[in-house]
Structures are given as structure tokens and as C-alpha cells.
Amino acid sequence: MKNLNKNSAKPLYLQLADLLIPEIKKIPVGEKFAPERQIAAEYNLGLIVARAALQKLAREGYLNRVVSRGTYVASHRPVKKQARQSYKILLFWPIGRSLPHSEAAQAIISRSSNEGHALDVREIDRSEIIDGKNAGAVISDAARNYDGVIWIDSFTNFYPAAPAKLAAISRKTIFINSYLNHPELTCVLRNNYSAVFDLTAHLLDSGRRRIGFAGDHTGRLFITERYRGYCDALKTRGSELDPRLVHMDLDGLVLNNGAELAENILRDRKILPDAMVCCTDYLAIGLVSRLRERGLRVPEDMAVTGFDNTAMAEQFNPAITSADQGYTAMGVAAMHLLLSQLDGIIEPGIKALVPCPLFFRKSSAKI
Image (cartoon, rainbow, N blue to C red; front, side, top):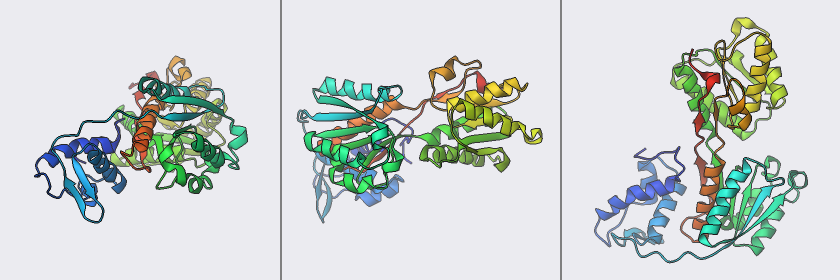
């Protein structure tokens, strides 16, 4: 992919637009420019990303897109930008407003304040909407009274019913940490896959060879994506996956499940892993605590990594290597995408992935 970074907080369509400007300047004004399918193929991107980049460049005056005829070079310089309209935006936030959701919210509040947008914040009670009976209706009703709506949090149970209802207001809505499999709905997600790929590669680079993975049995998207990153890292580095080191039968990802995981691992010491990739920091901390009770040392006997970059992981002894959840970057991306959709610069439907910075600590230190 030409100079495009999928792990960057800058959306791919913006990166692509920057790369296309020099290409536009090589073509005389009035001449035809490459179609979106050709651009998507050349840069190994989806059509939606290529389309969003061309729409942005058309909005800026570089291109003129003519229905059924194609895209033409309109100018080698951008037109003067008009002042952005002020919008009324509603932010749905999980009740309690706890970290890390507040990191995304703060980024949204800051941008709204700086640009003069009116922002209302409404708490959402999971117990009332997690069954899916009224989640779609809550968002749709809000969209009637606001120019834009941002939803923070994940409610997987209502996804099957929600997309069809929400497609009608797709330009007005952004979902943070929620994957809705609909081509017209915009979602901002963390790059779980890439983070765990890099954590696993770090363990391999540290000399670990029997690396295990731990999640739960729910099949939630973030777990399957993290597991996929783990598997691909092993494959890319030429290390075979040993199914006996994979533990996906836990009931949860909290401290007690970490202790349970330790007992499962220690049941057969002949296949003891020398490193474990855990789906959460709490699982990692519970694992390390029980391993030490049973006489094993971390990281000397077994390296351990977590995910979420919690305060507990940083303060624990040994401090846990982890991946940050990237909520600040998700908040920044969500506001950018919402305003761009409301301004008509891009079309809804982007599934934006933001990077998860890694924090390497003592629990995975090289021995």
C-alpha cells in the first residue's frame, strides 16, 4: 500500500486524499481523473475509502464529479474553505461516565467547544437498552432533535435489529466501540488485531517460543480479532500454533478468571507455556497472582501481556505489558467523521480503526 498507514489515527481516506493531490496536479484542468475503482485497486483499499477521498477532493475544488460520466480535474488549487456550520450534537455516554469512555467523551467535548458546536450529554442505562427493545428507537428519536448523534459503548445484543432502523439516519450518527455490520453506518473501533499481533511479535522477539492465548467463550468481536492477531503473528514469524496453549473456555475476563486460567495452565506442566497473551489486564493480573502463589516467576518462568492499559496494570508488581484502548483517538476520529458527514464531505459507512499504543513493562521483559 503506497505510503498508507492502517495503524495511524488519521483516517485512510484523508491519507489517500493527500496522496492524490500531486497526481491531480499532473493532469490538465478539464481532463478525466482516475475512477474510484482504479484508485481502490491501486492502493489496495475498499471502494468506500476511495470514494470518500474523491468526495473530499471534490469538496475542496480539486475535482468535479459528474454522474454517469466520471471524475474530472477542476483545479490544481483548493477553493477557499467556507466557515463550518455550527451543529447541535448529542453524545450518549454509559451511565456513571467512568474511564475509559470519558477519554473519548473529553475529546468530543473539547472539539465541540473549540468550534462552537452545541453539545448535550445524555447518560444511557445499559439495563434498559441492552435487550435491544428500544436502543434503535432511542437513537432515532434523538436524531429528530439533533443535527448529529454520537454513541459511545458496545451493546452487541441489539446489533441484529438496529442497523436497518438506523440506516435512515446514517449521516447523523457515529458509533464508538460498536461494530454495526451495515454499509451505511459509520463505526469507530480500536485496532484489536494489530495490537495483539504486535504484542505476540514482541514476545517472540524476546525469545519466547511456547506462547499461549487466553480469552473467554463468548465469541465477542474484540476477542476474535485479538485471537486472529495472535495466530497471524505466530504464522508470520514461522512459529506453529499449539492448540493446547489456547484457553478460550473461560466464563469471563476478570481477576478470578485469571486464577482459573493459571490452574488450567498448571494442570499439565509438560506443556507449560513460556508466555501468555491475555485478552484483558484483569485476566493477566489474576493469572500472575496465582502463578506466583504456585511458585512460578513472572517474567522469568512465564511472560504475560494484557490489554486495556489500566491503572492497575501499571501499578501491579510486576507491571503488566499492555495495549491502550485508544479511546481518546476514537473520540477525535468520531468528531471528525461526524462533522465531515454533516458537511457532506464524506458519505456514511466508514469503519475507522484507530491504533492501540503498546506499553512494554516488566511482565514481558526479556530474560
